[in-house]
Length: 271
Image (cartoon, rainbow, N blue to C red; front, side, top):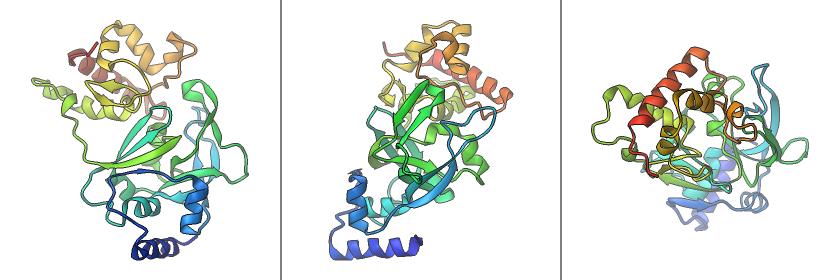
């Protein structure tokens, strides 16, 4: 469905007074309610599914989805790109994904509501050793077949079971304690990207994994920490913790590992 038609429908909603924006947080309506409100059906979007893809090659999957920006127009109002720097996605399982608004301006994102073949709206999350994981009510997906940057970022920006989205201005001050070595500054963004969707660090992060990340890391020796980050299933076969992105070159994975280790050893570590 052409985006200009959907935007026109949203404009009618705004002019009719049904939109109450500018909202900062929104509990998303059920997909059937959303379709009824905007009067349009989701469109097919084919992607490389990062939860199914392996080192042997990417796996394509086709979803029924709405372009994220038009849903954001609907629930937040047309000015959602202004006055905030981040969209926060909160999932039913406690996963929290914070994605800069700039990413939505530079790349194409969608909220999926089902599969084009009417199959179960689930996925086998191979990285987290889980099968038939429910994706609904909404699953944030990205066009990554022709977008190498998005493909290289793996599944960290693909939250599923999304039920609520928020516009926020993020402050990562808790991740920068006084006296932090400037050489460790790059580790702050690496921790946010690779760890803090599930883990919490000094009060900042997700709610899927219990415990403070620094305290957990400091309880491990170097070799165990390495295994937990690069190949967590070697340490705990039934773990749901995914390995550090295998899409990255081995040298880059090693660099990230060393930076994260040095950084977490310097963090306060809330017990």
